[in-house]
Image 1 (tube, helix red, strand yellow):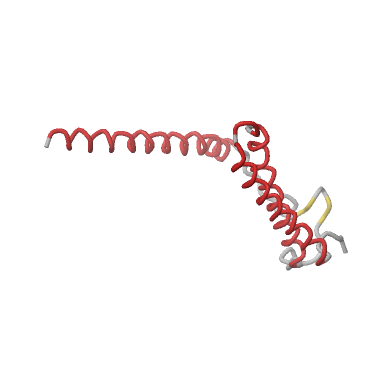
Image 2: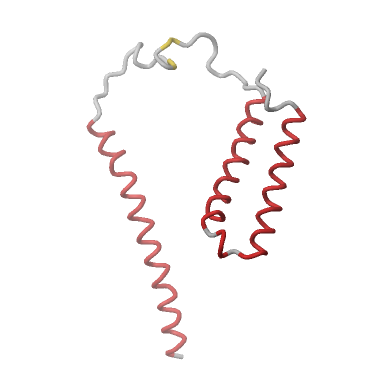
Amino acid sequence: MIETYIFVATYFYHYLLIAILGVIAVIFACTPLAIAWVLAPKKPGKTKNESYECGIESKGDPWMQFKVQYYLYALAFVIFDIEAVFLYPWAVAFTGVGLGGFIAMSVFILILVESLIYLWGKGLLEWK
């Protein structure tokens, strides 16, 4: 009975430490925002509330729909960015992964090359 209690107590103790760390992280992130909100000058005006981009006044409705093509560019970027994230650690540990790791990464790279060929064939890589 006591052994079970000790196990449960240490189990919850570890989660208590994680919860405390989470609370400290939230406080650490929100403190500069709260300080800036309190100390920032509040002088709203017509020119201050206007929307602009890169110092140029906006023209037209700010709520416009983007073409699906832009989302495809973003998706292609994410796919190949993830490739770099997985490829770097594999390259660092190349000598220790063995034949299985080499085959797994080769299949992964071949799938990404296939997706690149598909995107190229569909004409997605050509800016119109």
